[in-house]
Image (cartoon, rainbow, N blue to C red; front, side, top):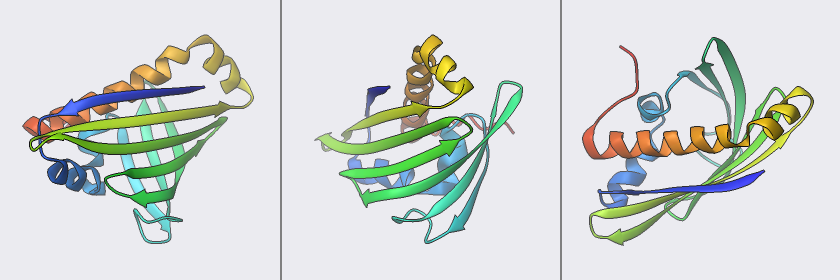
Length: 150
């Protein structure tokens, strides 16, 4: 399954990329993120691996992130492996005006086992969640609005 989400952010590209590139900001716009733990390599650089834990509803989901491309603002791509799910997430940022940036997120999902059924029955849920992250990122960049629970 492949799809693309995009959002326009009313901030200069330099500001948008700096906020995106700071892992300390992740829990402020990625609702449900419990922890981000570097495992190997230099965080944020190609080859780096990290463990992310999310609370999604009543369950916890753990995934391994591997950075594959880092060429900001043109591309930041990583793979995310969780139980039955393999995801490639490509992010790019394009200046529209001096104070406006387009954030484009391309997603590709592969499912195994039980998750194949979830992918078939609920494909819209994955796009909806991806779009929610983009909107929450936009709100954090523009207004400092965080999704982090105190």
